[in-house]
Image: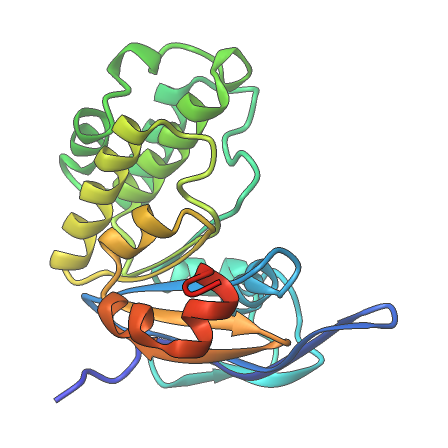
Length: 236
């Protein structure tokens, strides 16, 4: 039996100015499952994730976490209940070192050796005493993801986690996501790096024309004729 979703953003609509970005889009995030949302630029992947995390307010639709319905989901509230949102832009504050950030996470949420695990698995030991502005974009991304690991979230929503990182670092990040899912974390990822995303995904959802289409496993997604033609470019 398929586990009930831990977090649901359902029938979401969102307009910016005169442009309708989302039109009845949905996201289901299940414990122990990595769901990947793919689609062309501007289709609303980031918007949907931000609404699910409580960063943006939808025009219509609902957000539910652990069976609690939110008329107005807020990031601070969801974060206190176990949700970690990793935005596309850098997360670390330039006023603190990487080590400072990890220590603050550990003091606030505990976690025993979770911070040490994050440092080791993402190979950021040499970055700990550096400020974020001194890091490359790829190094900052690994440090951002280390914060998520140290937090030990029940639900991780990560926008473009493979952006600007090397293939070697992408393997380490993928291993981190798999380990979190194995420990029971519900994970949703967005991005355009199809080989990397499909390698880590359990389920794929395609966003197009303002809505979402669950496609099942990566193998099932590749076999979906319209998705293959319009997004993957198969048969063109």
